[in-house]
Length: 258
Image (cartoon, rainbow, N blue to C red; front, side, top):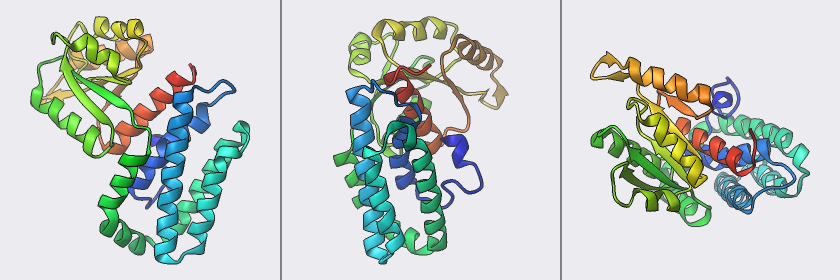
């Protein structure tokens, strides 16, 4: 979805809080099959309800019938055959972008006025993932920044740990998704293999520079991880890039899609 976002038309001018709701919906529609997991279904349905509610509020506040119509289409996604969901969602999203682009300033005003209400709406109504951020390279400041972005802008439940922490195994068990904060350490390859034992999806962050110097070891380890099939994310680490990456990996994991 992140690559789609960068296309000239798709999601242009759509506020971040609305994109946040669309991301799990998109990946569920893209990877769903006839044996969907209850967890994936719950994430899909709660984000569908959140997105439809948000569009409804916009339509009512702006007295815009096009947005009200899109609310109805959004809610109908639940009952559309799986093979037809992704084309319908793409078409719906393109129409949403067109409508919002035409009244961009009015939409921005509503989001500025009701930002806290929309965040509360998200936090109280969606099925949220529990993320564990692992400081595997002794970089507390960098990890704290990543934790803050995932919690305050991606709206995940976030905990953090180190590999050496006595309760690290317990935190792995309780988490839905694991972030390794660096690909620099040589033992990253051993660490990610642990996730298979715990049956957890994960992602490694590759910082290509450290203190202004290219970190060739981090780049090399990142490439090796990707070759082995483990997801790696290189800069930039914007909220959209982070949550679309997590949502994609998690939905593929839950829906058993290779």
